[in-house]
Length: 104
Image 1 (cartoon, rainbow, N blue to C red):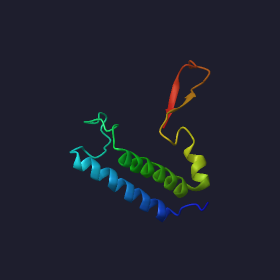
Image 2 (tube, helix red, strand yellow):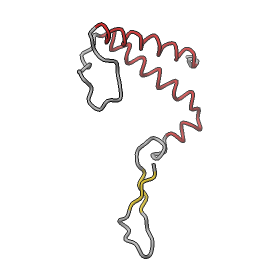
Image 3 (spheres, rainbow, N blue to C red):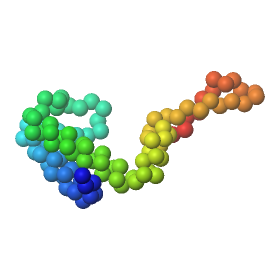
Image 4 (cartoon, rainbow, N blue to C red):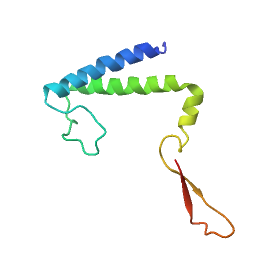
């Protein structure tokens, strides 16, 4: 099986995202955002729209990995790089070992 090119993946993302966006617009639903509480539940999507959404997510993931490359993939796996706090105990002779520093 041939690995899709980054242009193929970008085209799949655009095509499937358009299907998802058209459905949301036709139902009067807001487009996805980074708001903490979404205004309406969109878990009950028609099968073709759900499939388009999943294919767009999968293609976006594949595109992300291809653009990062092997070294970028290894670096992105580090906890401090992906946004999850990485805790390191702050140990010195005069300080308690329960002090923690956040490396973001």
